[in-house]
Length: 114
Length: 116
Image (cartoon, rainbow over all chains, first blue to last red):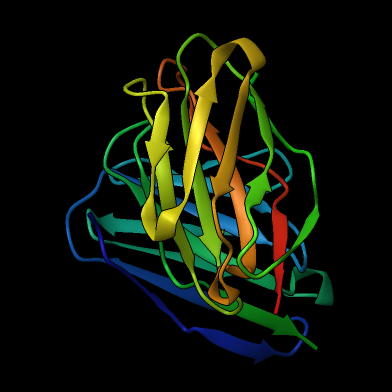
């Protein structure tokens, strides 16, 4: 298993500012993922962050808007840049111990942009 | 490409009655399938998973699901609903044989309401 600590749990931010979300895992993992869950919606994958390489972004998400760091095998950050109210969502960090195996999720960061 | 269809966006049952949450998938030969539950203001928790072993999978809190390849279904059931089961449920498919960086595909979710 894996225990994921995600910070902050929630925040209210002014439009035009940026917020960095941290994800700490209690064990070393190769694959880390960042998801967005818009209000009342399912999860959408933003990007995959593997240690030692650039993050890979899904269609509709770009590095300038969602820069990701992955400095080691237990930690990652996602920044939501130049925020607008449309960015109000829950952002979740996830890890997998192997492709196709169970995914473990952080508690999520509930972001509200005003 | 993989896809997941949760046939009901909202299911409402009375406490003590059976629960059925439907899920159909599209994937390659041997996908992995999961059900996750999300309680209000909480993270996602794995209920159960199918990874090509027994087709009837038992999970936590009395839930189980049956993998039916011929019907491409993975419906979630529970014999008797409890008030604490009220939550959002996500059916998820993964195809380990695929390369690339999108190992999990989430359904749109089914909100389960339990009436006293």
